[in-house]
Image (tube, rainbow, N blue to C red; front, side, top):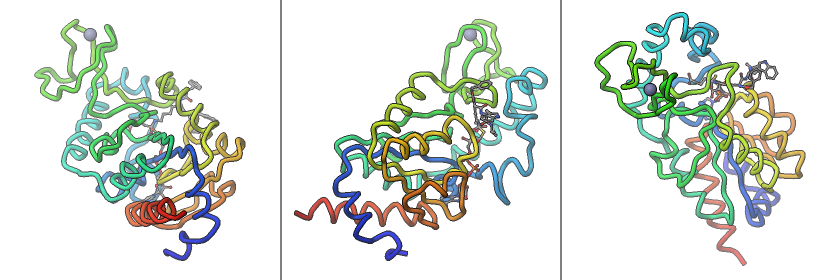
Length: 249
Ligand code: BJW
Ligand code: ZN
């Protein structure tokens, strides 16, 4: 595996990169024990997205949608970042600019110490009020489904299908994809828009695009380097190479 990663062209790219941008998906948290969405053991194999991950589904049956999110919240509370998350937190220190963009709602990048993370699909630990828009991280509401102090219904503050992504995070992510010279797509099937367009934007701008994923994805064909392996194993190796090349004259 190290031969696949450790070659002259990639070493040169790592050495000269000025701005590195990274997009992560569910796969980076798989080794922490968080299920992915698609694939053999994916969440969507057991639950249909349109029944749980849309605003319409929430309005039709808030109790059912809340049960599903509470089940996932409980699971996420028990897990820890893995070597992939820690490697990315460390990587931030090795480039003039480093932008970390995630589709994940589990908060594990922040927990691993990444200094700034654009969370494109929200955060599963956060609640948002449908009436006053206030947010909080409480999980001790007495009523079920939970109600805000203003009387409005609370929802998980994640982005469902058909909803807009948070404007600032999305525009900062697009700007980074257009500005970077090195882009990593890690652990995502790149099946969901608009996040899946970011690697294409980076490529169009001339960036070197690297994919880390044990399986092919929607973006594999445009990648300059595809590393077929687990991010928890590959990312620490990449950090090791970055340290080496940055120490070279
Ligand atoms: C490993 C690994 C290991 C495993 N190491 N790797 C047609 C064209 C363009 C767009 C659309 C369209 N039709 C509909 C749309 C829009 C829609 C969309 O993209 N749909 C597609 C399904 C086609 N997008 C939206 O609706 C978005 N909003 C939007 O577009 O707004 C504008 C608009 C509004 C109204 C009308 C029209 C436009 C919003 C998308 C929100 C996505 N939300 C979710 C749920 C979040 C909340 C929750 O958690 O419950 O976000 S869906 C789900 O998918 C979640 C994820 O963030 C997202 C992406 O999944 P991800 O991370 O890629 O996971 P997987 O499971 O797919 O892949 C895991 C990968 O890891 C695999 O490849 C494995 O191989 C790999 N792996 N182990 C490394 N150890
Ligand atoms: Zn409220």
